[in-house]
Image (cartoon, rainbow, N blue to C red; front, side, top):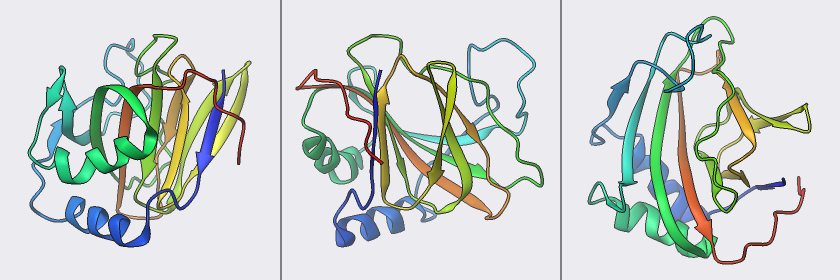
Length: 180
């Protein structure tokens, strides 16, 4: 099971336009009370988060899918899209964290987390019983096999944190290289 970190993933102009639009007041965010649905109780974060779905259930879920997401999916060279959603979390005084979870458990699915905020939040991958901490850095893409459990340690240094979460099947089924 491998992962890959790609900094400056999107070209500057496209990234700035996407970031500006996603952070505007025109996005229909939906509140989710639990950050890891289906996980047993004792969740470490009871604050919830906001989600905006671009693609789900085998079809685009919003008109912005074409402009915001299709160019990214082309760059990722995918076979099939499973789900794409943006997540918005708010600052807390504590470094709360989610439970470890999988977005998908199929061996041929890739999870991607695209960061639109630089802050002290971390994505934690659990690989071979070791934790790999990945910093939240603007225009960074983290790709990993969906069978790798992960969690988030939420930020306490900035008001809002934006990410776009991808789950897809890639054309080339080769494992990702460990690149940082």
